[in-house]
Length: 264
Image (cartoon, rainbow, N blue to C red; front, side, top):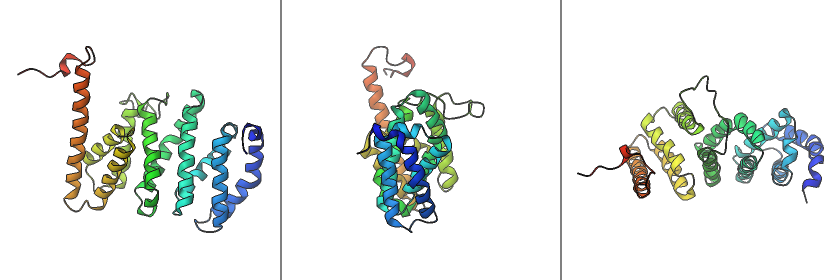
């Protein structure tokens, strides 16, 4: 069984079997199916039991490992894709529990790229079998940002100086990302969808339904259903905000006087 005693052997294990196996399977998504499942299960075991060994890899070696995880969840074979998504989720959790200097370096280098790749499989109909796990990973990424578990900026302030927090920047980034891929949707639709990703990331069912409605909206945009989904989403967000405001008003000093409801 893997554990700390094997950590110093991981670089040798990866050097001996990882690169040569990747060279066999990276030409397409179908050859050597038995090797594919095995190599990604090995990666998952290393990430779970010997995470410190991954931190000891050179930047180039770590990038190869991380790129392989992304490649795994882009498979159309469900078992392999699910393994890749599981590794990604577990790696995110491992880094949030790591020393801030280590975790911040990881998130600065890989967070936005991973976000793009998860959105890619989520909006690709050939990967719909992994929808549940895709939502879990995406929700976790928004939780990490919203709860300020990343204590460094994910963006270059010299280019995006109008944003002061990762949450503000990510709202902009997601809208721009989706606008480039789905020009048939209005900016308001994308803004409402993105706000829902922040609002619902701690409620797995609401997050999943929110994402499902967005995907259906993409498919049926030519009809009238898109506007119906937009209205429903906006109503839910307004109800949530109204409930939070009402609760805050019960506690003295929680809200500014200018935000309090005026009596008629």
